[in-house]
Image (cartoon, rainbow, N blue to C red; front, side):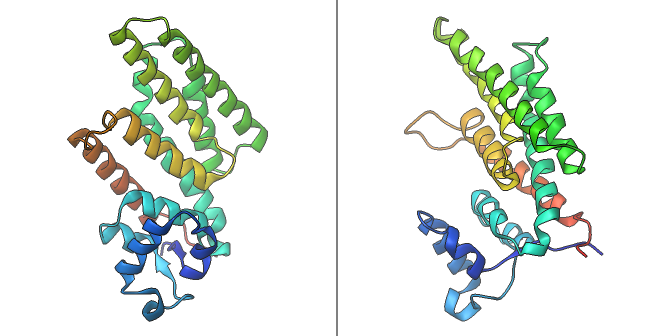
Length: 218
């Protein structure tokens, strides 16, 4: 038997400032808050299966039932690491001898196994962020094509850093959003393209698999 991560409108509403679009979409999904109830559990797996936007489901991760928080935290780290692995080659193609982003992802996976300290995560976050910053600095003096490759590599390093953010649910939100939007997204003012859609679909399926295999909550 596996656990089921759940939230509720009572848990989500305190986090709902500036989140009107998410709350409206969730309200429509359940047929109305007043009809559904403020206390009734909302299964995150049902949100994915119902086709809700991945960003909404990831936002809901921050407000699960309290006793589910340890399992949620482990899931968040593992999921963020999976998303970062997808874009890590963009960094390593440019800096094959720089292991800082890879180490950040490894630290996140270790945290998912309850084998990493907050200090180690903070150090890994800082190191991967520095790796990305060095590439962004190099991009400022490069020609257009080279600068674009360097900025993409920097973003990949920042995605790796995201996996080690102090709050696990922020890791699970920031890493996939940054990866999909800035690496598989679009230029400002243009629609999201098929690469973004494919990556977001992969991320949703990945999160669904993690939810399906979540250890039972005692």
